[in-house]
Image 1 (cartoon, rainbow, N blue to C red):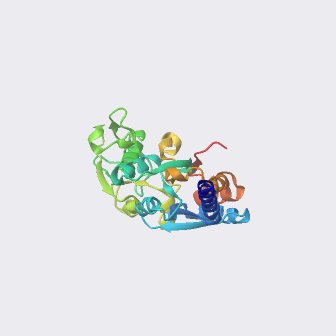
Image 2 (cartoon, rainbow, N blue to C red; image 1 turned 90 degrees about the vertical axis):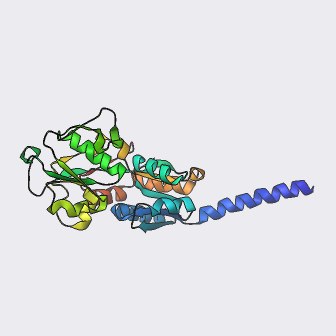
Image 3 (cartoon, rainbow, N blue to C red; image 1 turned 90 degrees about the horizontal axis):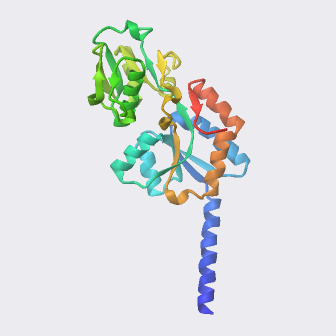
Length: 264
């Protein structure tokens, strides 16, 4: 009898915990580049009875630290290569839950209209972190400015450059600061979201964009593995991916410089 009552009490306690969790706001961490469409999703979720709290971070480290600590339920700011690199550095057990959008990354120049115009020894600013620099190098390879070792993909480094016919000089800059290199470098790897935030030049003026050439750069909703069955999460992702209001917000913020990473 005692065992039966104990089992019942534990079951009720577990059920109560689940109910309590479901009553709590879903906490979503992000950065400024992705905040506005997420705010639209939060407003839509509220209309559907789902409480969501958006937590905005100012750097690319804190969202994973906060997620690992349990301060937020999910974050949305990183692609798979960034996540894998962060996990290797921190040891955190974090997994992608669902795809979001992929923002195009481009090569911009204040001085030149085409790659043919670039002089020998041109200065080219790319991101300085291992993941985004790899994306920049792949973009330079697509432009025909360099050749990379076969198969290096997003892990490419300067050591993987096998040909550099224009003898371009690479300058590595923090990714969020690349927009500031636009005035000084001959060519700059640029992120439309940060260019728009800076309001310094036209985000659509790149000589070349990468688009969906590399689907590994689709931004992911990332969670701890034990959150995969959270019904709040599933509902919020469905709203983000399929709400016309959210899509309109994505279009307004990103224009034509993004693609969705999920199947409609």
